Amino acid sequence: MTKANIGLIGLAVMGQNLVLNMERNGYAVAVYNRTTSTMREFVDAHPGKKLVPAETLEEFVQSLESPRKVMIMVKAGGAVDAVIEQLTPLLDQGDLIMDGGNSFYRDTERRAVALTEQGFNFMGVGVSGGEEGALWGPSIMPGGPQEVWTKVQPILEAIAAKAPEDGKPCVSYLG
Image: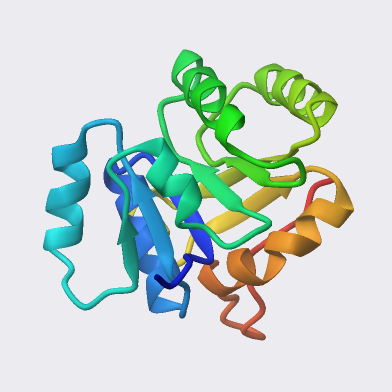
């Protein structure tokens, strides 16, 4: 089985469109949604795409190349914490979790400290541009350690909007 380059949890419209953007830019993407039927409908609607469906978080984690890169696109707040709590026992130290939702910055700081103490990498990743931006190129604002940023930089730069003047990706690493 081919391993996915990145995984995304949360297949509401923003998550679905980011997955399609990543896939269009050459990445195999593992997909998981708490409601399995949502994941199945999404995968079935896009035959021939480099999508790796997972019905459980265990399958999802096993489908990812190591070190794993996981983007969470669920509602900010308790839902993010719940996903992280279910996900971390399945991950290896050094794996990367990215919160792509609109989390409150103090929640992001709290998660970064807690996950770093457990040996995981964490980034808060702002995604701007709405549904269309997610599909065709959002503005992306990642924050976290520089050495972690470099692990995911190629993917985020590939999917980001491009500046019309020079074609550079609309990604600003915020530290």
